[in-house]
Image (cartoon, rainbow, N blue to C red; front, side):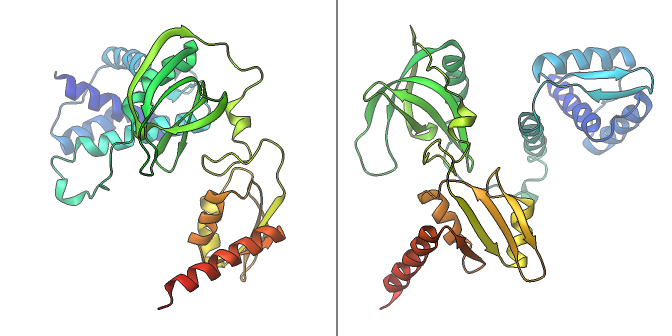
Length: 300
């Protein structure tokens, strides 16, 4: 049995258990079917399955248990919903990439630059062990690169980009650094004193994207969407605080507790003309000003 075959089988077992909580016979039927489709031999005994479950627990940190009362396998995980969702999402992408050599003409991947994910493990180690970290950082503008020395506090993801949240020794301020703009990352042996009462989730509680407008509760933002756009907003909320307050054939209206920063305003503008700002008044006027400025800029 090849290592490739074993890894694919692990993913198949995880995929089946997460979807249907099968008994051994149902799991074996699934593996037999996949053996025919993928031209591998995934058929295993109960003893081999137990070894696979141990490997899955060690490699993926996914704990698949057996319930003897109903004879079903299920996932018993300490992860929260977001973490577990991302683990499964990564496995789904891995499985898609695994067959891409045979289906390359049927899969169109987005072309994009490296996202700096090669720094993730090292930075997470630095965060966990409170190690001062040094790196070269270059902003998205044409500024020269700068040398940074920081206390890493957390990792933030936004729109398929990863960011380091850290206290910069330069001015003792908390900042976000895009991982794809970082070079020569070095986790030192020096420890830093953690910030008292700093919580990453609280820090971004009222933020949209990576720009933090403050940790105090912001004014209520109320937006009205066309029914068509509203369908997207209902399935993919703009913010964790989103609450639907009206859902009719004429509009979908939501309330959010979010700081109306530049990123948030750009998001609203991207959905024009299918959204209206109801309140606060200053945000409605700012969006109108930006629309007028853009309109003047397009005139010849």
